[in-house]
Length: 186
Image (tube, rainbow, N blue to C red; front, top):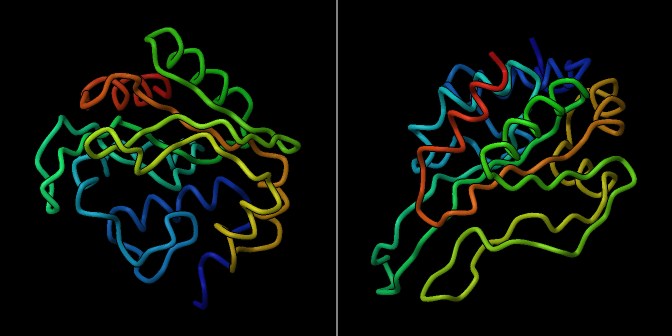
């Protein structure tokens, strides 16, 4: 069968492959998440992420909201619920963006010519920012970094797609963002 990622013809194909990877039906290193399997912390999010991927929002990174808790290093860690990915379908993007904004979620989107050095903290430890979202070096760089080994037709479609981040602004809350996004695609 060869490399299924290389045979992808569209962003929709990438979404189906990503959903299969998230659900454990496709092994190996995946583009996007750039790992061999999802992080354990997102196990409870996989059903929602897979549905989003199959609908056309190809997720490439995500994390649950985590209330402050003492970490491995003794510091207090916390996270905002967040997901990043790619959408080629403008109607889907509009539906997700509208639903997210209506419920107070933060949306950061970058079109083909977008670049941004602005960011929002999504993980911190004792008040020190450990991870942020929103910084964006541009489509070419992101596609070359995240989507190596993907079919050329899918890459061509990604060049015209939107890279988007959805963030719950409330630290530690993990029960709002996911239903908002899932309900927007029904």
